[in-house]
Image (cartoon, rainbow, N blue to C red; front, side, top):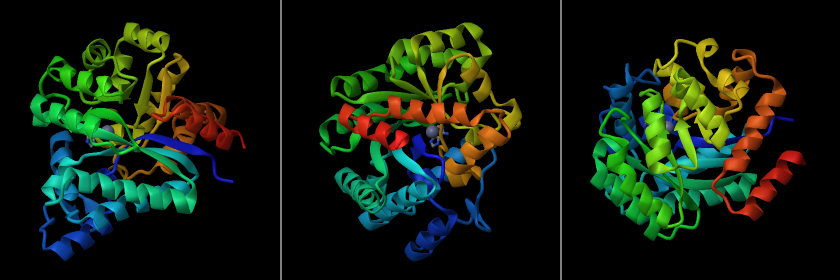
Length: 322
Ligand SMILES: Nc1ncnc2[nH]cnc12
Ligand SMILES: [Zn+2]
């Protein structure tokens, strides 16, 4: 039997297989030659990754395209043993495609339902505001998130370029989301250091942090994360591909786990980083020195931190234990 898995951090457009991007580009007459070459995405640093990501996300043009993407990704996860997934969604991509935000959300919801009906995988959506688009856009995303009424949308997140602006500039967006009943997570401590994680904790008061790994540079902050029970959505393969760390052996996942920080395993944007959730699980054991029991504890942690209601969480635990 495959090891049960759960994922809290995957950007749905970032899960686009290169072959699908090529097929849609061909169908819609989009030139992707700067971003896709011989079946691989082309980028060389964080800024060009963000640009490549945007170019690939732009090949989706219909509700059917978005629905098929979500369904295919969740089918793949379920086949790898995943029982739960949180997908980061960006309704701005719907607008860019000439659809509405609602059309985009309807499409991803339909993909999720189809995958759940076939495989049993449970999934929730977390809405993304892109930091480099500025506070007004991120607040707009939060306002839409709290008013759109899609039942599978349970969280709000800020991704994008962590080097842009100050966390304080975005605190209002998170207040809007929290007041509207959404759970919160925020990308921090990925490209920027411990100060970014501290700002996120102090100014956003999130339920979880996306990445957060660079907190390891400040032992006092690591203690705080452990003491406060902050959950980190760790994405080792992404960190290595983006040169945050040179290799899996230098990655701080094990150090954070051993320090008592609540860590989970995630793939972020799998084909961009030559990874998959299954690979992250395999490498954590084979190259990062984590035991099968430690990895099982991370899966349990992901269920504990999932943005679901309590009956759903109980059902997920039952599947883990079953
Ligand atoms: N790893 C990442 N960091 C920030 N923003 C992102 N958007 C997609 N992937 C991202
Ligand atoms: Zn991410």
